[in-house]
Image 1 (cartoon, rainbow, N blue to C red):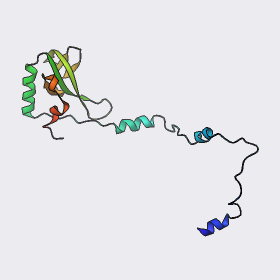
Image 2 (cartoon, rainbow, N blue to C red):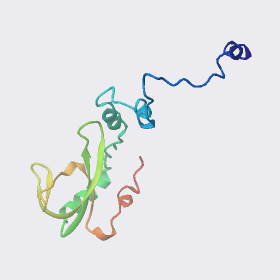
Image 3 (cartoon, rainbow, N blue to C red):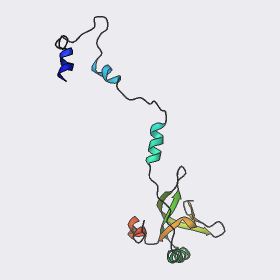
Image 4 (spheres, helix red, strand yellow):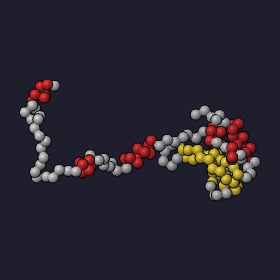
Length: 146
């Protein structure tokens, strides 16, 4: 390493060169030359989409499915329904809880229609809770292993 320094000892203590032809850049201008640019348009959005997490749909046990059927037949008043929504861009999806009144159940299309017009596929329902005020997300999945 001393050999490298000794090769430059004739110039190492010279004053910093200031051009007479070009005016020096301001600190903002100097910083701008190192600022990032989008070399790949859409790359950041693609990486954000890839890193976005989704959940897998839980298959209900026979016992849970029977309990859900019982709850479907006894719907009344304000209800909280937790159901799976498939992700449009990647595999998996997310569980969503909606609160409101059920307008009708369509047995032919296997959908549940809420008063606000929301349609829920019956096969995607994970839980129904008529006691909305005591409902928590953890209650839905407390006995599930995933």
